[in-house]
Length: 227
Length: 371
Image 1 (cartoon, each protein chain N blue to C red):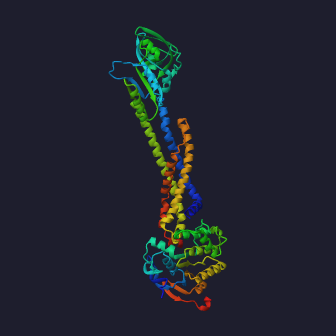
Image 2 (image 1 turned 180 degrees about the vertical axis):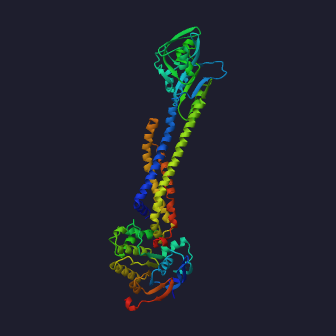
């Protein structure tokens, strides 16, 4: 039997007196789509930051692809982020002075070597073949988020972490982005999405629900809603 | 990709980078101008110094029975073809009487004296043409003592011989010439009966102290029976002035570069604030601190290169202007100043980019959360 891709064990994170995560434990199998849900301030973003190697836990441990990342140094975490993780942020976070294709190539540059053809192909894959040389200011919110998804995928990460990926989008663009996530899931990618959206929650394989830093429940959406 | 991002970075914050570039180019321009001036100033100043009198003297050796040297040494000096030789004036000093009052008559070559001592203050006119054998310059003290004025004539007697000279001008030098009457060498030789003899030769030699020492050695070797010595006070004063000018230029350059660095620091500090979000994102994408900082330092270095090159070109124009204003000559551009200016400007740009190094401490989670 294969080990889970992600193991979160008794995870704790404190910011001074505030306990953002309190003994959270769960596992994610390779190829799963997990929705991390809960009200604001429940610790969702903190959890995803620790999984993405952007923050250190105060206690417990996180094992990703067989490696405990809880105590990695800054240099090892940087390498971990470039090799294992693909980020999609609510605010898109594209570099404003780089074109769409250059934003994708930036992730290649920090990973290893750049390949403009691959970067352009990744953008075509998300439907932006005609927007390669546009800077973010010339793209709509939905298009910017698709660039971010192409950037997250370009280095073939083990884990895609998305923080409210549709939070800044209108309904039409939300549908496009959700459809992309569904395709990624069908292609076998492991996805963890922080979301308030019940629609995403229903599309995911499982929902990890947090309340005040505690793991409230892990549930699977009813099959009828998922379909 | 490195150059591609670098190019985009340079275009991204044009306003702030332009300010930094102006600060760098201004500093580089003054640095380039002063370095160009410094390289030419020594030559120009040395030429200026050569109008302030002799700096090498040739005379019979002390204790030598022959108190006078053979005037043939002038031909031997000319035969050496010394390029640094500006002027060579022989002098014969004889004791004469004007009426009952004793006076020193100095015979010389006025055309050479005019080149060497152009600073002499002459009322009336110089004895310029060799045809004017009957003219003389009278030192101001001697003129007062002998009651002479411009246009008057003076009767001189020495060893039973007499001559009559017309006073062309009254000269003030602040030196021994103020007590003398100066006429053509052959006139003095004729009155004294020392045909073909001189007391000493004054030389004006251009160049640095080391070059003057070299010419002195060359002359001493060519004129074995004579004492050839540099006038130490003049050479030392010249060296001191040049040293002080060099020091002034060095410290001015240092000060200007430090001021430029503060200009760059101000722009870069603002830029660092502006760039913190980009750096947070780059780190989140797996960018190492080294790789990210290389980008920003290369940006500062490129600014330094550009600022240094622009500054060099502006400095060349500035140096020409300074040359005309201060030395009344054109300062020629020195290409060797280009790498020095560019290197100094790049160093200043990198030092000024110090605030960008704080970007290395940016925590991506905080930046991406918008803290």
